[in-house]
Image (cartoon, rainbow, N blue to C red):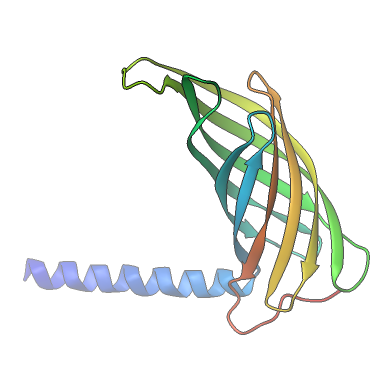
Length: 177
Protein backbone atom coordinates (compact mmCIF):
# COMPACT_ATOMS: atom_id res chain seq x y z
CA UNK A 1 0.00 0.00 0.00
CA UNK A 2 2.85 2.39 0.87
CA UNK A 3 4.46 1.76 -2.52
CA UNK A 4 1.19 2.63 -4.28
CA UNK A 5 0.98 5.95 -2.37
CA UNK A 6 4.60 6.77 -3.32
CA UNK A 7 3.90 5.99 -6.97
CA UNK A 8 0.77 8.20 -6.93
CA UNK A 9 2.62 11.04 -5.19
CA UNK A 10 5.51 10.77 -7.63
CA UNK A 11 3.10 10.72 -10.59
CA UNK A 12 1.24 13.79 -9.32
CA UNK A 13 4.50 15.67 -8.74
CA UNK A 14 5.81 14.69 -12.18
CA UNK A 15 2.55 15.82 -13.84
CA UNK A 16 2.63 19.12 -11.91
CA UNK A 17 6.28 19.65 -12.90
CA UNK A 18 5.51 19.00 -16.59
CA UNK A 19 2.50 21.34 -16.58
CA UNK A 20 4.50 24.05 -14.81
CA UNK A 21 7.34 23.79 -17.33
CA UNK A 22 4.82 23.87 -20.20
CA UNK A 23 3.16 27.00 -18.86
CA UNK A 24 6.44 28.78 -18.17
CA UNK A 25 7.92 27.78 -21.53
CA UNK A 26 5.04 29.55 -23.26
CA UNK A 27 5.82 32.69 -21.26
CA UNK A 28 9.30 33.18 -22.71
CA UNK A 29 11.91 30.75 -21.40
CA UNK A 30 15.10 30.52 -23.48
CA UNK A 31 18.24 28.39 -23.23
CA UNK A 32 21.58 29.26 -24.78
CA UNK A 33 25.06 27.92 -25.38
CA UNK A 34 28.25 29.65 -26.48
CA UNK A 35 31.98 29.23 -26.67
CA UNK A 36 33.67 31.90 -24.54
CA UNK A 37 37.05 33.61 -24.59
CA UNK A 38 38.56 34.98 -21.38
CA UNK A 39 40.63 37.99 -22.48
CA UNK A 40 43.20 38.40 -19.67
CA UNK A 41 44.86 34.98 -20.07
CA UNK A 42 43.24 34.03 -23.42
CA UNK A 43 41.46 30.95 -22.05
CA UNK A 44 38.78 29.12 -24.04
CA UNK A 45 35.64 27.81 -22.35
CA UNK A 46 31.92 27.16 -22.65
CA UNK A 47 28.89 29.18 -21.52
CA UNK A 48 25.37 27.92 -20.77
CA UNK A 49 22.42 30.13 -19.88
CA UNK A 50 18.73 29.92 -19.04
CA UNK A 51 16.77 33.16 -19.45
CA UNK A 52 13.21 34.21 -18.85
CA UNK A 53 11.72 37.09 -20.85
CA UNK A 54 8.52 38.50 -19.31
CA UNK A 55 8.18 40.86 -22.30
CA UNK A 56 9.85 41.67 -25.63
CA UNK A 57 12.55 43.92 -24.15
CA UNK A 58 13.61 42.55 -20.77
CA UNK A 59 15.15 39.16 -19.93
CA UNK A 60 17.13 37.75 -17.00
CA UNK A 61 18.54 34.50 -15.73
CA UNK A 62 21.48 32.42 -14.55
CA UNK A 63 24.60 31.64 -16.56
CA UNK A 64 27.51 29.29 -15.97
CA UNK A 65 30.83 29.64 -17.80
CA UNK A 66 33.57 27.05 -17.39
CA UNK A 67 37.17 27.32 -18.54
CA UNK A 68 39.05 24.01 -18.01
CA UNK A 69 42.68 24.00 -16.89
CA UNK A 70 44.86 25.71 -19.52
CA UNK A 71 48.49 26.75 -19.44
CA UNK A 72 49.04 30.43 -18.57
CA UNK A 73 52.76 30.56 -17.74
CA UNK A 74 55.62 28.14 -18.32
CA UNK A 75 54.83 26.08 -15.22
CA UNK A 76 51.26 27.08 -14.30
CA UNK A 77 47.74 26.38 -15.52
CA UNK A 78 44.46 28.04 -14.62
CA UNK A 79 40.78 27.03 -14.51
CA UNK A 80 37.88 29.46 -14.04
CA UNK A 81 34.26 28.76 -13.14
CA UNK A 82 31.82 31.68 -13.26
CA UNK A 83 28.32 31.69 -11.80
CA UNK A 84 26.28 34.69 -12.97
CA UNK A 85 22.81 36.16 -12.64
CA UNK A 86 22.40 38.68 -15.46
CA UNK A 87 19.71 40.93 -16.89
CA UNK A 88 19.37 42.55 -20.32
CA UNK A 89 17.18 45.36 -21.62
CA UNK A 90 16.95 44.88 -25.38
CA UNK A 91 16.78 47.83 -27.76
CA UNK A 92 15.47 46.52 -31.09
CA UNK A 93 17.12 48.50 -33.90
CA UNK A 94 15.25 46.57 -36.62
CA UNK A 95 12.71 43.74 -36.52
CA UNK A 96 15.64 41.25 -36.50
CA UNK A 97 18.60 43.07 -34.90
CA UNK A 98 18.94 44.33 -31.33
CA UNK A 99 21.53 45.53 -28.83
CA UNK A 100 21.46 45.30 -25.06
CA UNK A 101 23.39 46.43 -22.02
CA UNK A 102 24.27 43.62 -19.64
CA UNK A 103 24.33 43.88 -15.86
CA UNK A 104 24.31 41.39 -13.04
CA UNK A 105 26.13 39.71 -10.20
CA UNK A 106 28.97 37.21 -10.42
CA UNK A 107 30.70 34.59 -8.30
CA UNK A 108 34.06 33.49 -9.71
CA UNK A 109 36.18 30.51 -8.70
CA UNK A 110 39.76 30.59 -10.02
CA UNK A 111 42.21 27.75 -9.43
CA UNK A 112 45.86 27.93 -10.40
CA UNK A 113 48.25 24.98 -10.13
CA UNK A 114 51.72 23.85 -11.09
CA UNK A 115 51.76 21.74 -14.24
CA UNK A 116 54.47 19.37 -13.00
CA UNK A 117 52.36 16.85 -11.10
CA UNK A 118 52.53 18.37 -7.62
CA UNK A 119 49.41 18.95 -5.59
CA UNK A 120 50.37 22.56 -4.99
CA UNK A 121 47.53 24.88 -6.04
CA UNK A 122 45.95 28.20 -5.17
CA UNK A 123 42.24 29.04 -5.22
CA UNK A 124 40.44 32.42 -5.21
CA UNK A 125 36.66 32.79 -4.78
CA UNK A 126 35.11 36.25 -5.07
CA UNK A 127 31.85 38.06 -5.80
CA UNK A 128 31.75 40.76 -8.46
CA UNK A 129 29.47 42.92 -10.58
CA UNK A 130 28.91 42.15 -14.26
CA UNK A 131 28.67 44.84 -16.93
CA UNK A 132 28.76 44.63 -20.68
CA UNK A 133 27.14 45.01 -24.06
CA UNK A 134 25.63 42.49 -26.44
CA UNK A 135 23.89 42.17 -29.75
CA UNK A 136 21.50 39.58 -31.14
CA UNK A 137 20.01 38.64 -34.49
CA UNK A 138 16.56 37.01 -34.64
CA UNK A 139 16.57 33.83 -36.75
CA UNK A 140 12.97 32.79 -36.04
CA UNK A 141 12.97 30.18 -33.28
CA UNK A 142 16.46 31.15 -32.12
CA UNK A 143 18.81 34.10 -31.75
CA UNK A 144 22.46 34.34 -32.69
CA UNK A 145 24.23 36.57 -30.16
CA UNK A 146 27.61 38.12 -29.41
CA UNK A 147 28.44 39.76 -26.12
CA UNK A 148 31.25 41.40 -24.21
CA UNK A 149 31.15 41.06 -20.42
CA UNK A 150 33.40 42.53 -17.78
CA UNK A 151 33.58 41.77 -14.07
CA UNK A 152 34.31 44.50 -11.55
CA UNK A 153 35.53 43.20 -8.20
CA UNK A 154 38.52 41.48 -6.62
CA UNK A 155 38.88 39.19 -9.66
CA UNK A 156 38.46 41.68 -12.51
CA UNK A 157 38.15 39.98 -15.88
CA UNK A 158 36.76 40.36 -19.42
CA UNK A 159 35.03 37.85 -21.69
CA UNK A 160 33.61 37.51 -25.20
CA UNK A 161 30.89 34.95 -25.95
CA UNK A 162 29.31 34.18 -29.33
CA UNK A 163 26.47 31.67 -29.43
CA UNK A 164 22.84 30.75 -29.94
CA UNK A 165 19.76 31.10 -27.74
CA UNK A 166 16.81 28.74 -28.37
CA UNK A 167 13.20 29.50 -27.47
CA UNK A 168 11.62 26.84 -25.26
CA UNK A 169 8.12 27.94 -26.24
CA UNK A 170 7.51 24.92 -28.46
CA UNK A 171 6.66 25.69 -32.06
CA UNK A 172 6.24 29.42 -31.47
CA UNK A 173 8.78 31.68 -33.07
CA UNK A 174 10.54 34.28 -30.97
CA UNK A 175 8.52 37.45 -31.64
CA UNK A 176 9.83 39.91 -34.18
CA UNK A 177 9.42 43.54 -33.13
